[in-house]
Length: 226
Image (cartoon, rainbow, N blue to C red; front, side):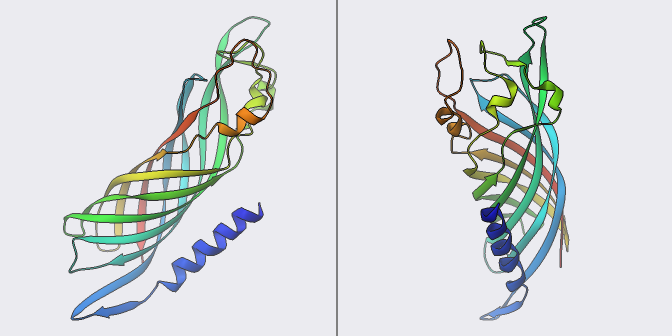
């Protein structure tokens, strides 16, 4: 929790100190602070579990630099999101399979390069992202004790302790006029989000495959810049 507080402090400080106007030769370079919010679709690409993407929500701050004489703009972004994902499980009593819903809280810091396709009104956005996330949490405690599909004895509550620090890549499009923009973004996790499960000494029965999974997130958001 302390690490998350440090991330919040750095991101907020970074956003506020960049709110200014500068002059580069004869070109006005405009910096601004943006507030953004929207929704997500989250999934984990893995062979260990049967998953189904689910919807969540996202919001945060951005510190942008509009450079009129360049073919790109840049921005720093700090985002908080609650994401949801469904993982297939079954009961030993009746063997009926069902999707069990989990939630995942994330804090993300990204540096994006905005390539101007139609001036600053339509840009291709790409850049790296650092992420701190919590554990996978069951949204309904009554689903504890179910067996995760593909395993003989792995329980739904056993798979919560996933890796908390991850490195992602983000790519997307932003469109808008003036202070208002819409953004569609795909975020892929380069690191193994399930790696920490390999150190948990879990009861996996006859399935001895290593846990491996990569984050896959789509985010749609609206941004207002001041």
